[in-house]
Amino acid sequence: MKQWILSFGTSDLARGLAVLADPWTLLILDAAYDGTKRFEQFLDLLPISRAVLSNRLDRMEQHGLLRRDAYQAKPIRHEYILTAAGADAVQVLVAAERWSERRDATAKYTSLTSSE
Image (cartoon, rainbow, N blue to C red; front, side, top):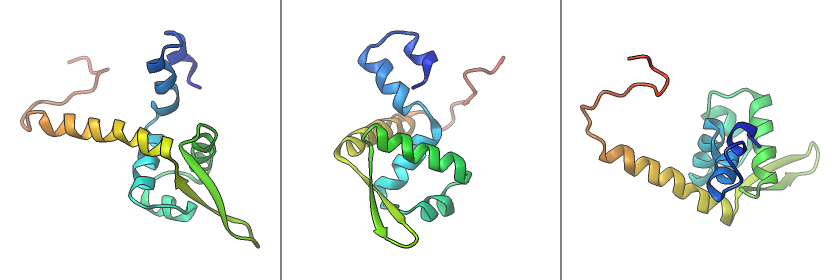
């Protein structure tokens, strides 16, 4: 878990952010919701390294967002299936998308860390 988030406490929000507050996790979650299931499909879709993808898929499985099912025995290959908990987490993405859509299209967007 992201220790800097948990340093703010163990509230439901802090625990949820510890799981979801990673851009790759959110993009993988979105891709899984759209039907992407296989490791190579995620690699083709996202500009992510194999190591990072493997790490995030393992972590998402540990947190119950994805289920890993073997679809081939030799060599072993897996599909990553969105679980009910993962589908619930997708609602975070939907809410963020709706928020973004409601923003003024002409608004100036700057980084939170910007000095402007």
